[in-house]
Each structure stands twice: as C-alpha cells, then as structure tokens.
Image (spheres, helix red, strand yellow):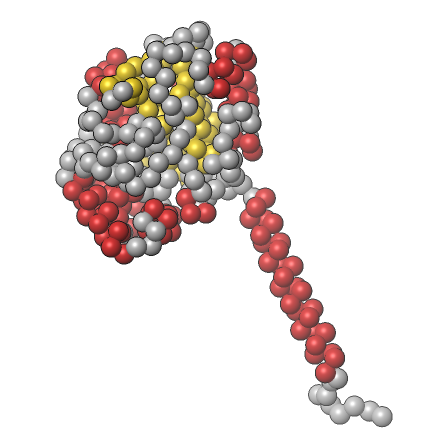
Length: 361
C-alpha cells in the first residue's frame, strides 16, 4: 500500500530528532575540546603620542577585552556581583585617581572615553590590589651572566573569571613627552604594569606580599610604569622604590641589563629592604626573605641547575616544584638579545612553552 505524500512514520521523526541532538552534542563537544586545546596568542598593541593619544589608542584597540575584564572579572569575581560593593570600589578608585601622576591620569581618562567604560571602573582595575580587594603570589628571578641578563616572572594569579587564557597583552608605548619607551605585559585595561622594561634595559616585575591597606595613594601598577618611564637605571629606580608609601603590598623585582645588576625590594617587619644578586641571581617567591639566602625552592633550583642560559631558566620556571596551577603567564625579558619570551594561552602557562617576540621594534 502506498503511503500518502508527506506522511512518515513517527519513528522516522524520532530518529531525526535523536540524530540532530547527537550532532549538536558532538559539535558542542568539539568546540569545548578546541577551546581547551587552542592556545590563544597574546594581544599586541603599539602606541605612540601624548598621554591622550596613548589612552585613546589603547581603548580603541582593546575595547572589547577591556569591557569583558571589567564586567566579568572586576565586577563579578572581585566584587562578587554586589552592586553596592562595585559602586564603593569605583568611588575609592576615583579618589585614588586624584593621586595619580597627571600623565597616567590623563591616559586613563582618554581610555575610558574611548571604551565608554566608567573612569571609576577602569581606575579600579589598576588599583584593586592597593584597595585590599585581592591577593596573589608569584615567582620572579633575575639571572645575570657575562653577556646576558634574564629577567623572569611567573604571574601566579587566578583564572580572571575564566578569561585568564585569553587576556594577556603586550603593550609597547612610546610617549612623545620625553618619557622612556617601554614594553609591558599585563591585561587589557592596565594603564600601569605587572611587568615592564624600558629602552635602557631597566625591568620591573610585581609580586604581592600581604594585602593592600585600602589606601588611595598612587597604585603599585602605576608606580612600576612611572619608574620604568622615568628611570634609566636601577640606581635611579632605587630612590623611588624605597619611598613607596606604607601599606602598599608588594615585592618588586628589578633588573638593570646595562649594568648587569638586579635586586628584590620587599617589606620585612614593615620595613623596606633590598636583596641584591648572590651567586649571579636573585629571586622572589612571594615570601619575605630578609637577608636569608637559599630559603625558597626557586632559590634552591637556580643554585642547583646553574641556570646560565635561556633554556635552563625556562625549564626551572616550568618545573612542577616551582610552577603553580594558577600560573596565567610566564615572561622572560632578554634585553641584550632584544627578545621577550612569553608563555600564555593555557593554565598553567609555563607548562605549554614559550613564544618569542621582539622587544623594541
């Protein structure tokens, strides 16, 4: 008997539905697998001009990732989605903004206008550590040899609300007001820096020790960039670092490639101290060491391995004894060979290997 046109057994439609669901599930699983496998490259931005030019260009080029970091990390994660806490933190950040040096304040306001992100929200992204809203720990080291100085930093943070793999950026800035050109590594929206090196070979990296005390002084991220843009050497930077305001939670690792020197500045018993190179290196592991040497696992591995080349240092940074599961990126500045080595795009980042980038083009 011939079936009427357009008529199919119910089982045929059910099979089609099942096949469709399976196809969608397979596609979804494939997308998830791809997202887990894929290692996104860092954003790269080159900026030049006045503070207004730097801020506006930065905002235009990274508008979308800046908005995502603001909304999903700062608002939802750091502020726990609490509208009152979001408002209070943005207001505190605006009070902090009044104490920023003018070039960086102008740059932030220009970036806020370009992205249409409230200035308080963008300022909070640069000051939330100083306001006592987060805490993290890192690993950093300076290794000085006859013909090279390696400045390394494992940023051990959190996943930035799930965006940690996708938000690392390299920003090259060349101000036209006499400040030094810099290359910094951090996240979209940072006017300051987590890691920065200037055209004279002075590099600085931020590790955190303790909690910020909620002060609204110049934020530590801004201080690092200001020092990099105004100080040609470690000798010049030392004065600024030793004048850091009380309550600023920090360990700051500094290297001077031209002189082959390096130091870690940290607080020990509420007093600022400096540790210099010993056995050709100095390292920090988010713990105050004072004058004690060789007390951290990173110190011990640097001593044992005699990390005198790039490969050895990369292996130490990626070692299970040093690498934390929260490592978002790992950076090595190699000023003498004009190179920046960056592991990013997966967590822990250093486990996946390093990409090579030029420093100053």
